[in-house]
Amino acid sequence: MTSPLPSDPARPRPARPQPVLQAPTAAAVFLVLTVQPGGEDRTRALLAESAGLARAIGFGRPEGRLSLVAGIGAQGWDRLVGGRRPALLRPFRELAGPRHRAVATPGDLLFHIRAERPDLCFALAAEIMRRLGDTAVVQDEVQAFASFDSRNLLGFVDGTENPVGPDAADTALVGDEDPRFRGGSYALVQKYLHEVDAWEKLSVEEQERTVGRTKLTNLEIHAPGSHVDVNTVTDAEGAERRILRGAMPFGRPGHGEFGTYFIAYAADPDIPGTMLRRMFLGTEDTGPDPLLDFSRAVTGTQFFVPSADFLEELADT
Image (cartoon, rainbow, N blue to C red; front, side):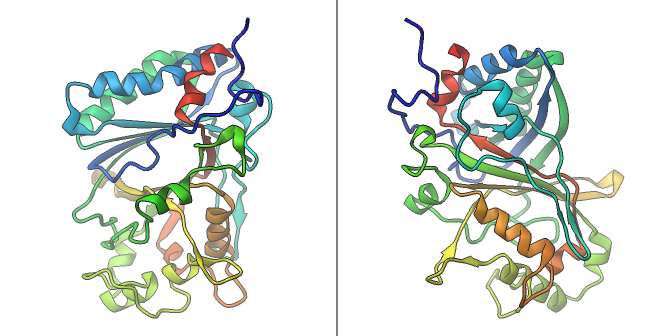
């Protein structure tokens, strides 16, 4: 008897998620790859073993909290998995606004590696690339770090409104609305580069009005059209719709590079999609996000993060 495919509707789907909900760590590596023709079997084997690789590398160092989240893009899904896609999986759509552009860039695979120690992130990333070899092409690789008290390189706290506890799971994880893919999540990633010199020419008060929060105490202020205001999405009843953010700073001071690697997990990708449309295109009430005058998106890709059980079964497909 052959093993059922992970998407076989005759088999009840387990809902053991990948570590999407992990709390922030001190270090991270983001890898976005495309798979070369003929590399599908090798890639499936790597995905099926990915959780085991993270356990093995992190086993003797539990204080390091090493974890790995693996996602598959829309085009990669058809080649690596086949069959029915997750209901809302689609390629990232470029947005061209009056002043700013959210670019769409290639990506079949996403690996989001997190740990308290950068050497653990590095070791796991190196092992992933060793196993994939020349079957994968690196589209983007970022080694990120926590900065002071969860601040980005513009000096403001990032991720303040992240849900916690059961709310985080409800926000980020697919449920009964798509039973075959229960326990999965949609991930949207963008790499932003900051114009730090221009930003630092603003007064603190101007920076605060741009962001919509106080810089020192991180309190939300009334600032119509600010970054916080533009990124607040509500439903028909007025309740705020949230995402689970995992953004982290990165940079190379010697090259004048200062940035934020943005990643959002959501059970419904239309929520971060709506935020991006508001940011880049503006609304009837506001213009584009004023923070984009100092931050430029240079990548944009969307993925589905299957449940851990789904990934482990990929080698049998």
